[in-house]
Structure formats: structure tokens, C-alpha cells
Amino acid sequence: MANYSKTIMITGGAGFIGSHVVRLFVNQYPQYHIVNLDALTYAGNLANLDDVKNAPNYSFEKGDITDEARIKALFEQYKFDAVIHLAAESHVDRSIMDPLAFVRTNVMGTANLLHISRSFWKDNLEGKLFYHVSTDEVYGSLGAEGFFTEETPYDPRSPYSASKASSDHFVMAWYHTYDMPVILSNCSNNYGSNHFPEKLIPLMINNILHNKPLPVYGKGENVRDWLFVEDHARAIDTIFHKGKVGGKYNIGGFNEWKNIDIVHLLCNVMDKKLGRAPGESAKLITYVKDRPGHDLRYAIDATKLNKELGWKPSLQFEEGLEKTVDWYLAHQDWVKAVTSGDYQKYYNEQYIQR
Ligand code: NAD
Ligand code: TYD
Image (cartoon, rainbow, N blue to C red; front, top):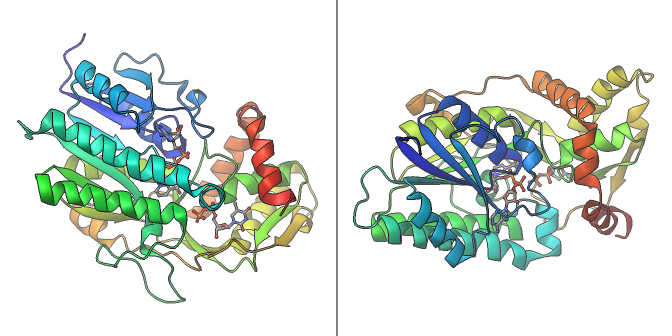
């Protein structure tokens, strides 16, 4: 085997954000061996990584982060220097349907990874790092004013955000209790290619294309801060290499949008791309029953990351959204593959039967 300067386990690398992080690390750091550990749940898709699957510094291992024996065996085999942990159940609506799956993966899985990492690293922590990727949703919901900073107290309100908040607390508990070298980042909503079409933007693109109703929850007034996924991957790269151990960094796009405005923007872009009359796609907008406990507004203050480590978003939202629409239109095989089977069952439960 080649002599790599680091061997890094990236968990959840077959998912949306994870696949962008794997691609960036495999291409940018040929001196690192990148091992992608993923259970390949409904959200994991190895086709996301077709372009790097034969790279000499890339390996894939199927496995569940809650499986103690499997993770230990991988640590024995690869002697990881670092973990970048993205594997998670990630969709709020699914967490409302099946909360315990979120506790299992996000809480138990993270604690399991921490426990095993420490058992292999504890005699020599030098050069080791456990990087935990988390969300701004741990901070709860904002009113019309204000931003989440790294000091904002946690106030999670959905089973998803509660499970992520819990995992963040375990990560910091390992730092304080065992001196485990950890870093934590909390990012706002991502968008871009390979995004599973259960989330707002890819779901709306898919429904516009197929002339299906566009289900806007409540009044569409909820606000999210959107970041292009490749900018998130760059932020993770920056924090992994330059962040302070024990530190916590907020990542955001300085880019707040009301849901209904995004849906209109997508309709306009799609009308142009599909040669429809202006306003045609917007006729599909359908207001539906609100999500229970729907957080009103998320807004990240990413000043610390910008000032300390020099990171900033690279793309304007309109440009990123158009790139995203183009990717979906050019990758209909990918969409068809991920929306067959189980997706239809989920879609019926979430949108048709309620
Ligand atoms: P995703 O749902 O697209 O991908 C999750 C990946 O984890 C999939 O490949 C899945 O197969 C894998 N996975 C799930 N359970 C597993 C288990 N038990 N063992 C091993 N692998 C498992 O998620 P995403 O949107 O790419 O999010 C990745 C991470 O980033 C998550 O931790 C999420 O909380 C966080 N995050 C996401 C966003 C966002 O906007 N999507 C924003 C901020 C933070
Ligand atoms: P989502 O993409 O699920 O991300 P999150 O809930 O983690 O922020 O949803 C983004 C916003 O869009 C959120 O306010 C809920 C809303 N939404 C809809 O209005 N309709 C939908 O079909 C979906 C999936 C989301």
C-alpha cells in the first residue's frame, strides 16, 4: 500500500454533503487515504462518487456507525488518524415520522464512533482529530431579528435537531472528559447536486419538471439561510486543516430566503429552461398543512470562520440555484434511480395521505 501521510475515515460519504467532501479530499489530497464508511441507507448512493471510485487513495467500506464490531475492525485495519463524521439521518419530516431511527444513528452512532476512536487513540492523541459535522438547527428557531453565533444556547425543537444537538454534546463531552481532539461545525441549509429529492429545493425541481403540485408548508413564510454544498465542503476542508482543536465554527451563506420566494425563483428558472410561458410553473404552487413545530427562521453568523480562517462563500444564490437546476435536468437517470421504490412510499405518507 502507498505510504499515506494520513488515513481519514469519512462517514456518510455516499450522501449529499458527504460525497462532495469525499470528492474534494480525494482530489485535493493524494497524500491522504480516504476511507468512506457508509451504511447506504435510502439516502446513500455510490453513484454520487462514480468519478472518484477508482482513485488510488479512495476506499469504500459498507457499514453502520452503530455497529461496534464493524467500526472496531475498520480501525484495526486502517489505523485511522482522523474521522470526519457526516453519517446521519438528516431529514426533519422523517424524524417526525420515525424519531427513534434518529436517536439510534445520530446519538448512539456518534457516541459509538467517539468511544471506539478514543479506545484506539488514547495512548497517543498527537495528530488525531475527530471532526463532527452538525447543523444550525441545534440552536432552535429565530424570530425576525438576530443570528446564531457559536455562543447561542442550544434549543432544538424537532427530533432531528434534538438528536444532532445531543451528538454535539457528546462530542464536547469527549473533549472535556478525555482530552479527545475534536472540532465541531454547525452549518446552515445546503443545496446543490446530488441532493436527495425529499428536501425543499430538489423536491420542487423534480415536481416542477413533472407538473406535480409544489407543496409549500404553512404560508411559505419560514426562512432558511442557504449555502452551496461545495462551499460547505471547502469550509470543512479549511476547518479540518486550520481549525482550533476543541473549537466550534458556524458555517453559513449570509443568504436568507423565505421558502415561498425560493419556490417562485425555481419556477421562473424552470419556465425558462423548459420553454414554458412565464408564470406557468408557479400555477403548481399548493399550500399544504404546516410541519408540526416548524422552526420559523434560521440565520447563521459565520463571522468567526471568516475572520479566523478566511473562509467565505464563493457563489451567489441565483448562480448556484441555476447550476443546481442544470445538474438535475442533466441527471434524470440519477433522479429516477433514487425516486423509485421506497421514495414513492415516503412521498405518499408525507404528501398524499396527510
Ligand atoms: P444525507 O441524508 O444526504 O446523507 C447521510 C448519509 O449517511 C447517507 O449516505 C447514509 O447512507 C449515511 N448513513 C445514515 N445512517 C447511517 C448509519 N447508521 N451508518 C452509516 N452511514 C449512515 O445527509 P446530508 O444532507 O448529506 O447531511 C450530512 C451531514 O451534514 C449530517 O450529519 C447532517 O446533519 C449535516 N448537515 C446537513 C445539512 C443539510 O442542509 N443537508 C446542513 C447542515 C448539516
Ligand atoms: P428542508 O429542505 O426539509 O430543510 P430543513 O427543514 O432542515 O430546513 O426544508 C426547508 C424548508 O422548506 C423548511 O422550512 C420546510 C419547507 N418545506 C416545504 O415547504 N415543503 C416541502 O415539501 C419541504 C420538503 C420543505
